[in-house]
Length: 513
Image (cartoon, helix red, strand yellow):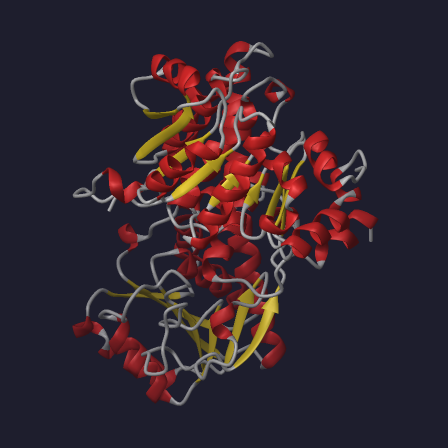
């Protein structure tokens, strides 16, 4: 095993949630491991697992399939069991035109070419008597009706079918999870009571100790470790907030940006505009008076408050404190400077934000200020580049990301904060988990792009996501925006070009209720 693999494998989760598993599958697909391949591997693994538990040839298997990808896994298992010599009856709970994914449709069409596989449909509870009759003459049941995406209680005809399966006394093999069991399941949940559950890739948290799961085993279906380690579209999907038709700007978070100084005027505007482009409801900038005028001139979309001095000082605290009442997250640091009174103001602001449980992103000079009070790092998201990291922690780093994992994890755990170390291979850790973003371009090596990243993180934090998941998703969005900007303009982009590409990145993740 390569040294880098040893360094990171223990930081990947041993047990995953349904949300994490969905993200892993999404990332695997982005890496080139197709859903069709995943489905084939899952279904064939199911057939092999069944054959390891019982004699298959000549036995009759009733395979209950839904119209989603769990049903698709069942279609594949049916094909393989038939090839092993079993008699197979497939019941589709729904109609063929309701099969939702292309991968499941492909495998359904394959079954249609197999004349010796009996295929029936159950569309409503009045037809479940067919299932009862089939249960009386089958030897085994394979449950591939519903996967981990179930929400609420089971609806018909699933509820009636589950009741029939549980009262049949047959040995039941559940594919991935027993139908009806999910992350929101409770003791009185109506779910298939499986004899065996073969789950895929990693154990699911809600299967542990479940009275419905029976004997649980895990099958490797070929998903690469990189689908968990590297950031991808799955990380963005898990943090995006669904849009309701009757919603208002307050539902999507107010982001407060504190930054700017006599030297740097554009930095807070870039962070604020990035938060808006991601989808935050409002971006509020607090900047020194000369900078505030510049920020107002950059965009009419920003709400701008000015402080009296030329840089942040203790006199600005009442204004910052007042606006914290409105904020759902805060960015502290873009263009701030490191005047002695600014460092003290950062200390006071961070302390107050922590007392209010307000999520904070510290960047650039905001992060450098923590050299004077590293104990206040707890709970924040910090986004230093290597030079800033060395300035605060007085630690030299290796040239490759995996050479630094142990040190970064150690410091993140010691101080209790989420660390995003910027670079071509960006490392994100909260001391327990690890992500690496390789989805980037050298075109991002231009002033202001770090401010853009901070704004993206803050928008995700404002939606109620954790520091780690927000930072991981933001790193991917940031890199993708950079790639799109470079595709259009070559290595001649500015941070403003990056901001303008964020909507085209986020559009694919839009969700509406």
